[in-house]
Length: 630
Image (tube, rainbow, N blue to C red):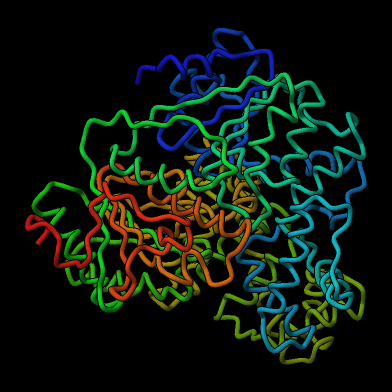
């Protein structure tokens, strides 16, 4: 791909802060990759003096691959997600400074939170509904994201219960990682060890919350030039306190910063971009700038209406079958976007309809929809964690909880926790005590714990002798599978092992410590996992930054988008989310909705305060499709 004049201007800009406003499909990732090449090969900036920060692991992986093609892996600078960056340097400085975190620092990931921490806190607080626990933790996270001095909560009992629980299990919540790094940089200044960066490239700057922005500012105070790339029109993470004001005010916050813009969209056909641009221009606070399509193909925007959810799913599957069979589209050219998919309510019906049409389809809408979230997958990752740290309390807890062959249930695990609390020790210390004296928690329970603790300890001692990460994964796979008789659980274990093996290759042969840290710092709620060779179902948030030839937007109706309670900034988030979904389509976008409403909710007059433009061919019924789609 040849760089355009506006892309070249951004690539070659040096020696000051800069903001790059890059609309959808304008080549932001290309510019970031080429800019690293320019800095290293033309400006002769050492790779160690360049930092590239992204928002998701998928984005970081893509940037590493692109940059490596330009300059080779030996010159590759540090490319990381913000959370991985925070974890890395908290770990490196934890022996030198006081950090108000359990040590050694162990990050609780999504699974730990949803399957151990939240349920435990619910029981300890004697709550009837786990939703209340989610609200309490959300309040903590909101304070960290907003970068307030100290987290506040109206429930002091919750704080006491949670702090005791984390003391026994020795974990840090991932939501507080960036907050702790930002506070440490403020408190300890240049004594807190970081590399001396000359250039810091920040991708998706509009998605950074006040705490994230504080990290960027601290890096600039240490002498780094910030090159921030993003698009205020694509700011959709208000739920984590990220708002477009950060990128909008960048040139005010950094007065000498260059203001750069990319205006040529190479993704969306003109008809799609025109509609999307019309939608987003109703936001009066956005930064107005030109954006035009340079795609030659004609695009289509269609509204499909169905009487019920089953007919809707059947219609989407039938159209997809026609696109594949008659017009040469591949299954992975088709993307289905959902605003919400609680309990897989939408995706299950759609997947069933596609199965009837014999079309391969994959769904990645659930926060825990990955191989390491299965029961056997968690046993594997927990075992590898114990190879890194034999006192990883959450890993021990997970193995006891998920290895069904050990016959340890919830009440027996609660006995271990209570013993730890009563004796002011950690969970793994309690396990060691009980393995020596089983009667400490009752003979029958104690003997089961003793047997399981001995089995895992022996397996760890043998696996520790392996020479590589891949060997450790394979060794654990062989010996853990010996105790599994259920074929489905065995398949889960094998899938998890393959997933980790692929991740090792993606990260360019990391150490086991690096591999575990990368997994711990990944937000699966926003990570993208697309299956090649299949139609993919994603939530709108997860699909951000992706593109597809054909996009179905399903469920864009009242009380879904925008939701029932949306108002103010939340409503603007919904508008931008719809814009992001529209601009993920290259050739065809279908808006699918019930037959009873007259227009897509995000476009209805009372929402946008105006009427739909007349130059777009919106259809009134699915049967009005052109003959070629039948």
